[in-house]
Image (tube, rainbow, N blue to C red; front, side, top):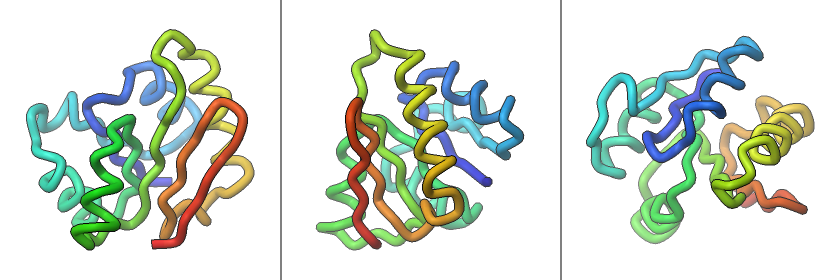
Length: 116
């Protein structure tokens, strides 16, 4: 799958996705300092799922009606990188391409999803 990892996403998650064969554009490597609006525009332009840990994207997508192919919001404590990787992998295995067109929240014990 094609991903756009926001710069707030930890590098090990990006490495995990790449090792699993995903095409990942990492904002921290390519265009650090982009505004959230510019990140959404890039995800749309590149047709990539947006992986983020920033809750502000919910406001942009739902209240301000910014179009985006899909958003995956990680809501797991930074001190748990192995858990983040495990839960992201489980979401990809369970939902796959179905992540496109959704706003998915990944938490420690559950997934929450809302259609865009």
